[in-house]
Length: 331
Image 1 (cartoon, rainbow, N blue to C red):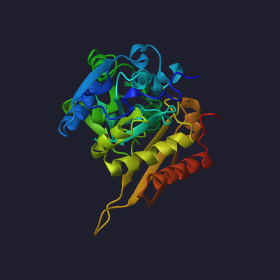
Image 2 (image 1 turned 180 degrees about the horizontal axis):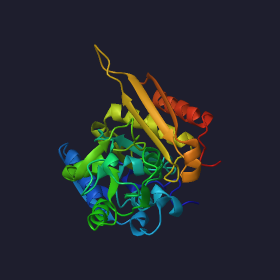
Image 3 (image 1 turned 90 degrees about the vertical axis):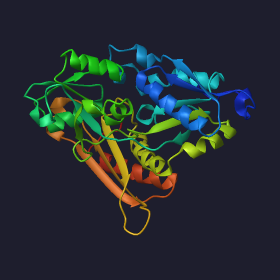
Image 4 (image 1 turned 120 degrees about the vertical axis):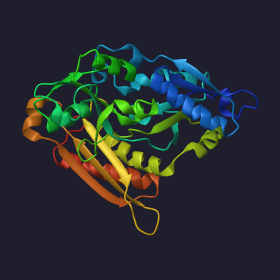
């Protein structure tokens, strides 16, 4: 049996009377910021909270792309083991790094309010993508960003870039790249917004599903914990990312899928917006094939007030992509 399948009954399944809540977290500066953010919000609601820092396999393997070594799940497996074994009660994730399908016995308990979901260009010398000279080296660890950058500037040299945010910035500052592309949310959360030279609007470069949002994972049997985390949730962010993740799930999405998906509620006069617009894009990571086919794009809008409606809208957009020529991961 998979070590992460069907966790056994946990002694922490009932609400603990005395012990603090324990948050499992990676030890990068951004991951610790995220865990501290959740810790502060829980403490404001009367909970005692401690952090359990961990190094994941994804943090250790830096010489190969995620697509070649097992995907973004490498960043969460050790945290899930800590949950299963009762060493931790919850794990905080950048939602874009959380696999679309959780192992049996685990639940996404909460999606918090979203930061800026856009991608950002960071460069010591160039103020925009258009300013980069032909053949300039641009670093990114993402197949999604690779195909979108290739569509915008096929003359650029897109180079792999691994490591945590500070490591990536150091490699840029050492001159290994002319520019790098990072999530704006991480830079802003760490007080590094001044490093952003330009942001890519979604119409120019669609974000990854869940980008900018934080998700909290728990063992599904801890119903008391689900209730404790409910006040931290942002319902509209949760609906938007549910639609985005449904696109990726239907496409067999992982970090080896060059797929973008972004949803946002449309402004409506006279009341709370309930119309969700979702856009998605898929591109071939093979530059020669991409040059022939280009990006495949799709989009829909519709009323969304429930998780089921959000997931249905996302699945429809995935069907549009595949009808237009995008390939499912398993194909």
